[in-house]
Image 1 (tube, rainbow, N blue to C red):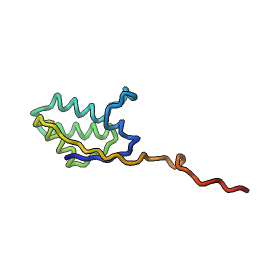
Image 2: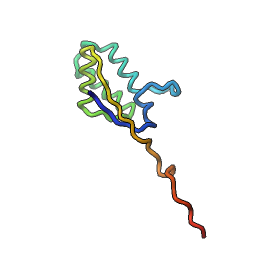
Image 3: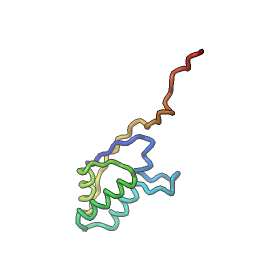
Image 4: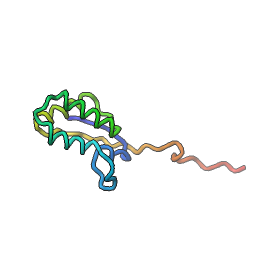
Length: 102
């Protein structure tokens, strides 16, 4: 089973989000490939999956991408385990202690 971990505030990079219609998440690219690349060479599919992951700023392992490419080529489902982590915060967004009085 392919797996990826990403912060909760980055789920829109992976999954279609109706609040962000202009974005092209990885899910849409995967669905397009699954619909058009059944029976094609795994290497062709793999390069397109790698490009889609890069464009969506996702870090799949090579093994996870290969598993997905094999599934698309064979026309079979591919399970993807998504581990959601805490949202990343910018340094200026982090909570700071109370300011000291002068």
